Amino acid sequence: MDLSGRVALVTGAGRGFGRAIALALGRAGCELAVAARSADQLVAVAKIVQGEGRHAIAVATDVADESAVTVLIDRTRAVFGRIDILVNAASPRGREAFMATAPPQWRDLLATNLTGAYLCARAVVPIMQAQGGGAIVQVTDSRAVRPDGGMSATAAAHAGVLGMVRSLAIELEPARIRVNALCPRDDADVDEVAAAAVYLAGASITGQALEIA
Image 1 (tube, rainbow, N blue to C red):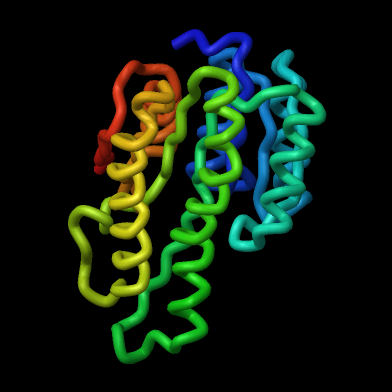
Image 2: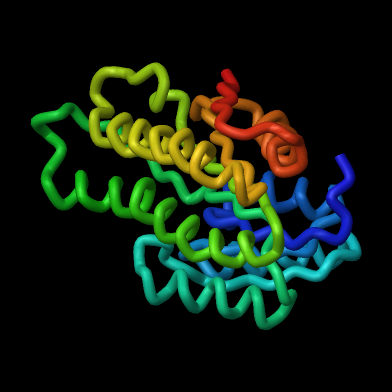
């Protein structure tokens, strides 16, 4: 899919699925802002994108921190002038039995997975509305649909994200903003996940949750 001329913002882009998605979007023609907590990993990703002929910036960001998200959005707009695609791939997992999950761990998982997704989407929606449209792709987890035992915090966070995606898709459809979810298993092929994210970023569908085994 050719996404030339579009600006994509990818969170969780330092490693794993987020990194693969950022690189795939660059190869599809996007200019990129990549965000994650680890600055070193981000810089490495941005250098790869730049080496393949696309403009990329790296912004170290904790997506659970509203002020940090504001800085990320402001920096992206200052450099590129617009944001056409948001991919929220900052989605940590935790494996603990329910009674072994301490309240701070529960809060941390929900903060990054659910609150982080909310903060990033809330920041870009007005921009996309002013531009006449856009695409939000939320990378969640297969456990949002098919939860495992021993992962209640992760399952709760990702199920919440999936509910938000489906509601937002309906709410934002009149503004031509498409909102979809990508639900891979932990061991899903990263290239398949990246290809699916590029597809959702460009396809004329909304309110969908793609599972990748």
